[in-house]
Length: 179
Image (cartoon, rainbow, N blue to C red; front, side):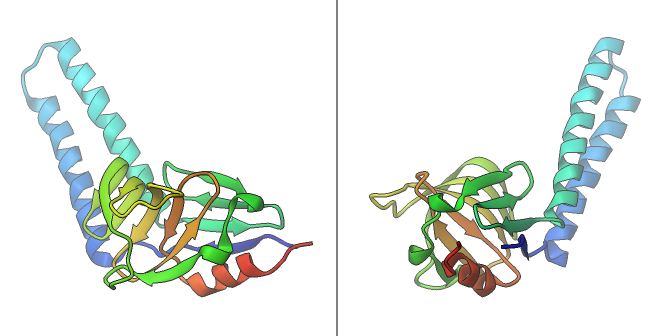
């Protein structure tokens, strides 16, 4: 089986605008630090931290537009910013996977974000589930907007919840037996 690549949904224009505004705000903080009279060591330490945050957020914005799931006969690689995960196909439970609408009644309810990024139109990282099952109480999300997502259980103790361009195609590939 050749590698199949499935693209995750990119950020919409409103979310991209929010993200760019946040980047501009951090850059403005950096400019203000440079013009504010501070001791030299404090200025450089503060500027270094702000530059690191600016770099991380810029990289996340770039990677948010280049996310994918790569499926081979033996593994599935979820390539999302900060949380690149490679799982053996045996760890996936595609028979229990489903495609749900985030605004619908069948959508999973999230309790809180334990690690990650949350902003209007973009949720990325580890979340606790409000309606935890016997199998799992956490999920790794890469969700853009409020459209349809693929909810894929794993035997690793968490769910994958992904916004995909074509969630049906990935689900069909996962359900196809491999040699």
